[in-house]
Image 1 (cartoon, rainbow, N blue to C red):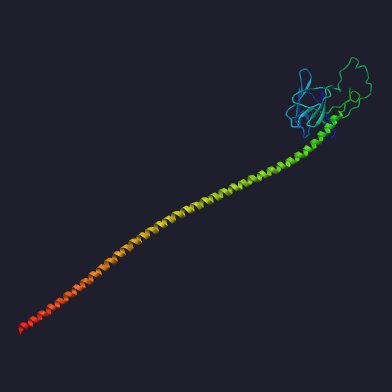
Image 2: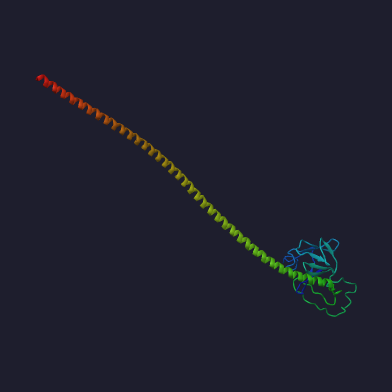
Amino acid sequence: MPTLIIEFPNGKKKEYLVTGPSMLIGRKPDNPIHVPDSFVSGRHAEVRRLEDGDYQLEDIGSHNGTEVNGRRLQGPVVLRDGDHISLGGITGWFRLSDPVNPAPTSDSTSLPPKTGSISTAAMNGPTQRVWPMSLTPAPLQPPPAELVEANQKLRAARDELAVVRKSLEAVQAELAQSRKELADSKSEIEDLRKEKTAELALLEERRRVAREETEEAKAEAARHRAAAQQAEARLDQVRELTETMRQEERSLTERLQILHRQQFALEQRSKEESSSATS
């Protein structure tokens, strides 16, 4: 049975049997091959069994990529026994043979095991395999020194990236807070603008009413000035008429005095004539 062996950063290894025609690999717990690491995407890669019996690995849009034997996948690749796999920095190997159940031979039932009893070692997890120590056909070869060095550099880069991500998260949180404060400021400014606009509209209305009242007062004053001018003109006319009447009165008085004097003279003359006639 094909097996995918995953080695975690803490040095622990875990084996996953490739039992179905298609198995997803990722960080989410519902993946058949669950790899709980922050550098592994939720849906990272997929292992498929082809019609000819080969197995194929394909990256399905992961964030940190998938490599086989140090080459980053740009499309699906057929896996070979012993291929070295990297899932966003998490290393592993693909084993095609099944050492637990080797193919039977014609004399397998008659030959006793060469090593006596078989010892087993328990592995963690429900999908862990137990390898018989004496029946393993070939030990796993350690990765090349270049690969070990590359993995060390990759882990260091991962640690640095984790620090950068934390810094980025802090900056993003600060940016979000700044955006919130800016939004609050904009809201306060908008409320203040509305308030001042209302106050300005009220002042403008008061100014309009004041202008109308001023214009009305000016018109009223103009009417009063016109009425005063008319009254002054009439008063001048009355004064002129009064002066004319006074002049006529003086003229009449003078004429009356003349008439009185004439009458007195006539009376004196009449008396003198009467006295002369009597004598």
